[in-house]
Length: 218
Image (tube, rainbow, N blue to C red):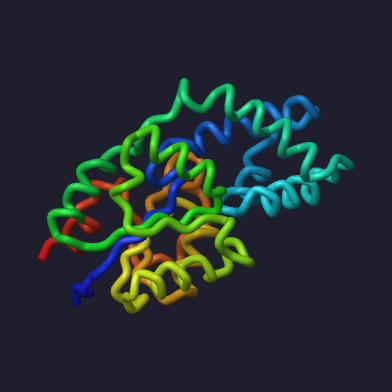
């Protein structure tokens, strides 16, 4: 039976924009500088997590002696040099936003990234004011895959989790949304396609997947 969707929550990186590709390039360069060429297992562990937790995973997996702060500072320099030369919306994003607004459904963003970064990206594409709520790593104690950010999002939107469509691109985010009881649809991309999405209600090909569009049409 088709669930009644009354609100929509988007992840940000890799779901709305191709920033996971830029993070991948950044991580690859950071690891290459340290002689590590098999980067995907490291990046898989980091994807969808808050920055300090992601770099803790990198340090643990690679047995680095550098601090989280040192790695993050170097990573930020690489990332910022690439960001606005490469960033693009994921296919179907703007049409999906239009459809949600036509259906008069509230929408939010819930990201493991920080607030300054979220606002920089959404302002760059002139869509910050199209979201009723935004939730970032600054707003929670526990990062994904903990469900806190989605529990907070559904509570503040004022909708039952079962009626909230969450769109995610990573296993960590999918697990968080599933644990919060939302209607989680995963939209993997080339860098996350091999991850575990078994807790998703559906795995979509893109943001324009007919399953997503059908959920939203009354």
